[in-house]
Image 1: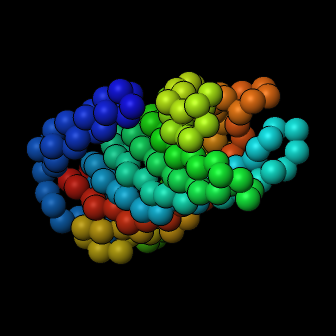
Image 2: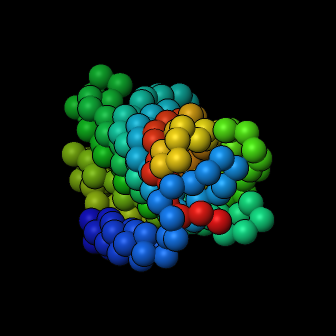
Length: 193
């Protein structure tokens, strides 16, 4: 829980600082923003136990900040939380919180659509009604790709993003999780580059 609070504080402190650097709040066609602040829905397809597919789904949301530097490279701060009840007909409930950071490479053209790929690393924390897993925190990483679209001078839509998410949270066997995350959401565009 402590890492969750520190990550959230870091994002909240980063947002006003980047917004102050923004030179303009309206972007013309073809312009790249300095900072995108986004949020949306996240779906996880999780695998437990690791030896088979006792697969289950988690639903939740994400918030991220994307700081665009030059030449199609951005730095991403991504916070995601998801929850599942009564996993596979049991009484197990789980909430997972991922805090990931890293580079994104995107191709920006005069089109409204922008494809991108990213690799992020950080940590993951689990809250569960199983005591061996409750409050567990460990390394996590993700890699994936997505497509976003400019909706207006201020707003954009992250149409779809698909990520492979790896974590080392306890699972009663090998303590390695391999999940698929699919997300969609909107973002606010600040500044122009």
